Length: 66
Image 1 (cartoon, rainbow, N blue to C red):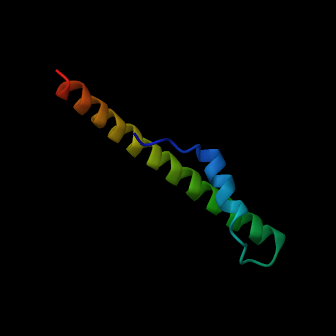
Image 2: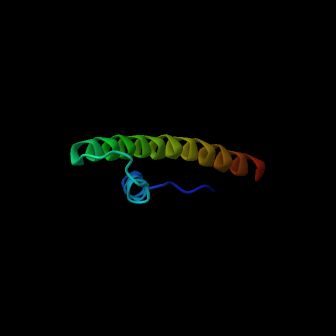
Image 3: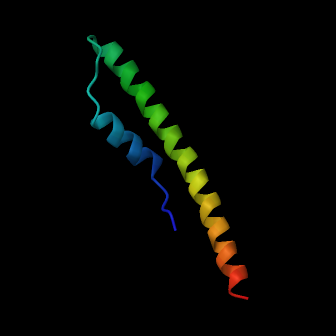
């Protein structure tokens, strides 16, 4: 079974590991915020897929055991 990703931890890891390309502090903050939101949303969408796949796998296992 696939595992869920913690969206907050994932987003923080992404922004921590990505260098900012902007110069001013405000531009860096905006860039990092956009990256955080995108990473968070991507993790949430991934988790929805994981839940659906795990449910399908569980149902398949349940019905094949009968």
